[in-house]
Length: 177
Image 1 (cartoon, one colour):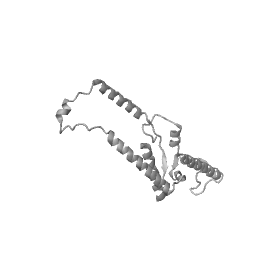
Image 2 (cartoon, one colour):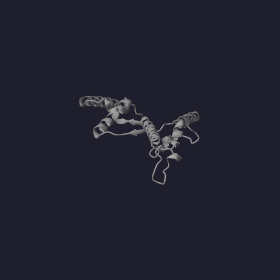
Image 3 (cartoon, one colour):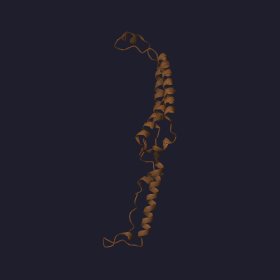
Image 4 (cartoon, helix red, strand yellow):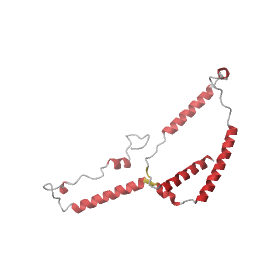
């Protein structure tokens, strides 16, 4: 439940826990008498059962939550941040220059030069088969990906949020280099 590409026939321990009621049905002994009174003999055990159930729910919830505000444990000074940003921007400038030099010539436009497109060689049958195989393999691989549901709690102030966004942007730039 809650995952992409999941089937309804699978039953796991998590599914059983999800379908279990959070608060159990009250015992017939602890029902109200005359509509106003409870049986005092079962009242303490009911409270401890409810407390244990509440504790287990809170524990399960705490295990499934990722606290993003805790990721801010190692902060950067302003000058360190500026140095890293300068380094990343120079790396990005160098890479963008090399990419523009390696860029192949664009394909001829169909509307401006149709005779060149029609006169070019046909795509070979083996190339078509290879592209079809690769597409089928990619489709098969993508269809087998299963992601579990993750609950994220986002609680931070504007300064922390800006810092996290800056760190994420720097991380993305570093992945490109």
